[in-house]
Length: 205
Length: 205
DNA sequence: TCCTATGCTGAACGGCGATTCAGTATGGGA
DNA sequence: TCCCATACTGAATCGCCGTTCAGCATAGGA
Image (cartoon, rainbow over all chains, first blue to last red; front, side, top):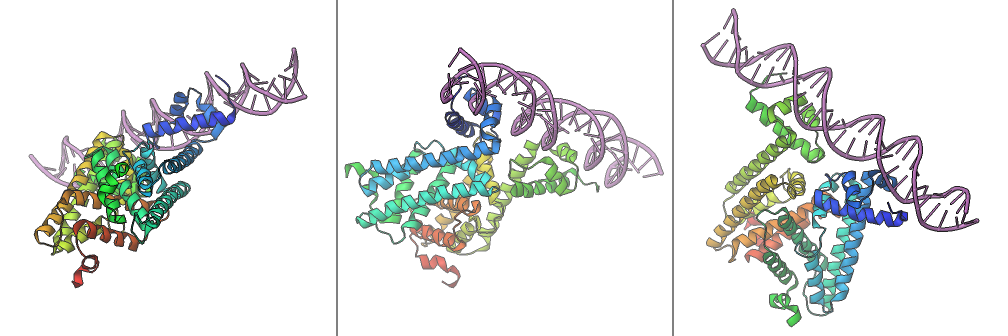
């Protein structure tokens, strides 16, 4: 065993924890699974995190931080309001690269009975809605979008995507990639008073 | 212990199972919890259902049947297309009387890793969408609604409600009853080309 | 170079919870 | 009335898994 600094080892283990949660589900992961996947002993994990509950809580916090910072990057990478909003929502959508979706569905289920977890999820969701609302606000200021309730529009857009995510990930009667994209654009058009075509091909506009 | 017919005992236990799932969560219920709540021994439950997994699977099947038959009743009880659709969706909404919502969120999480469960949920969801689509179709025929894609509209409406249900039930930044109702009506109006006012007060129309 | 703080381990522990089992008792048919 | 199929039970079993513990080993400062 290569000896590492506590800090390094912790993030290493947390990453593997996220992998395993995604693979096996939050309620099914065993400490031993994470240990094996990370190539360390189970006791090491307890040594660093004290309890399994702690391990999972920290892993979820790490995941929210990552998601939010990725969101920031995605937003910074586009220039027009339309492209930025579309980029953000496309990344949020279950068909995007956001690999963590399954984790959030697990987390919802757990959070219904876990105050602390509910709080973490609440912050994540609030920051998502705020970010989307802000993008919408920018678009309104630029004259691209038209709505008098950016926050409401952001809530509804993300809620629709949450609902679609469930259907996409649970694998039954799965809506196609294209359906989801089309529906997202339709919803944006309706909420923001934009032409669907302007959304469908923003780069060629 | 009063001795009952196997059939009676089974439904009794299944009901108590659903209660306990809602109370404790699908992954946390123990056979002993259900047994205690039902006033029987744990062995009785295994006697009737062979395994815990089975017990939960059967309970969920029962729950879907109930939901669907309640849906049928709700729909039958209203007369105009607008009232029927609104009734159905209001019942589906997490603010409605549908007491089982938490169970479905748990079930989503489990279904991501359980083919059989995913199939049950798929059927439930498909029948919901079909029913809603049919109501929309009726409304279109009657000239109340306008859309060329009833199934798509039904999918999006129910997906939005799924997403809102999560926010409502996880208890963080919970949208209010009224928000949800307003948003539902707004979405219906957008999807179906109806006046929001006609939806907001259908009985006085 | 040595020494120690600390990263790390394997083996054992402990308790929990599903399932088994051997047996009890009762409702309903003959 | 009697009898037995079967509903039902308590106690025991058994495997699983988080956590503890006693010690090992190494990086890095003195």
